Length: 185
Picture 1 (cartoon, rainbow, N blue to C red):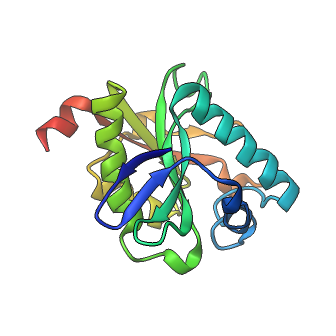
Picture 2 (tube, rainbow, N blue to C red; picture 1 turned 30 degrees about the horizontal axis):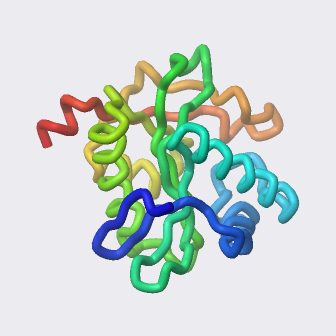
């Protein structure tokens, strides 16, 4: 199922043949630098099954991001419910992404994120989309800024799923864009 296409990219549901790439990005120390742990192949396979199921049930989730010309997967990008109460209210939707390192610095995340924001606001009728990251994750926060999201310091939070053994990864800054702000762009 293809959800969106841009000039260079395809956003689609995951396929069995995508498992090696999914496992690669979840185990790569550079990709996972701002996450408390990397995943084994078995853990990645289980997570991919969970993500595919969630996409099938809700139409939201972290989709495979592939090159349009070859359909080669390069990472993931999508919209997902946050499940981070009380820090973010029930129903909050985030935009998030991860790319294999060899595809960094080519503008893919910005291109796909702009299309995904449009999809979230126009197709799903969302009132707001958020994104959050560790403050030192400047690659991600720069994308958030490029796609028109604004920092909302009053909504920064200590991520409840980050263990105390990784205190440098607990604090998260939050960026948001409302439908009204998106339409004004």
